[in-house]
Amino acid sequence: MSIQDLSVIILTFNEDMHIERCIDSVKSIAKHIYVVDSYSSDRTVELAKGLGALVYQNKWTNHAIQVNWALDNLPITTKWIFRLDADEFVTDDLSKEISERISILHESVTGIYLTRKVFFMDRWIRHGSYYPISFLRIWKHRHGRCEERWMDEHIKLTDGDTVKFEYDFVDDNKRSLGWWTEKHNGYATREAIETLNLKYNLFVSNTVAPDFFGTQEQRKRWLKMVYINMPLFLRPILYFSYRYFLKLGFLDGKEGLVCHFLQGFWYRFLVDAKIYEIRRAGGNEPEGIRQALGDMYSIKI
Image (cartoon, rainbow, N blue to C red; front, side, top):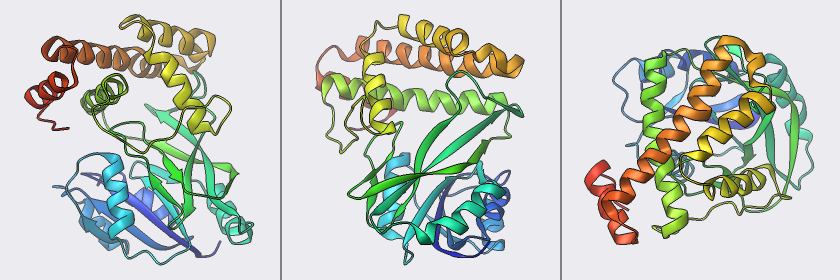
């Protein structure tokens, strides 16, 4: 493997449990590794600097704003950008594939899709529509930005073609279920904001257009539009049933049951509960919804 014309961007907040694994997985292929930290209170910054990463800090608002801040403020000079989360890492096979293929891609290619392999409680979650799912994680500098969403954001290319690489990157968070549920409580608030925005036009955002026959992001967005038009509280029941039974999530064992139930039902039900709570407080007008978000979650839109 050899160093490529590639910069890696890693967003962090208190990730000393994962950051070394993440950085080590890309050191052999990346010219520069940038860590954009949200003022961690643990050893994240120290560890990242010790491994040669260039560390910058910016206050956290949401994922999209942080990614775009990185694109606007980091001194990126490479042809390609690769975005990784701190609890993710690149497999040896993918590292070799990037090393061998990225420099010989056709000039028209501006984006590369990679397949994610998710582990939950140390078990690979292979079913329930968890695998294979691909994401546009590598793109040419100045040819893509993160769409402006509070949740479920994707990189949106401004032009060019895409290719898909064969091998996987891994998402394997080692933290406890308590941490996971607390994190997803925050996600649920952001998901509720996105859902309410689609109904009340709370803010204007440059997002991927839903299209069942388009890119994977467009197809996913189309399916999400179908989901949010289903009845409140019924849709998480249907979604969990689809994932666990029709998409064979039960084959993932006890760990899979925990994963599919928490992510496919509990989290989605919590989103609906927050939407219901916000509507009760704010009524059915945009200004009332905005006021409720400010009063209840200190979020100004």
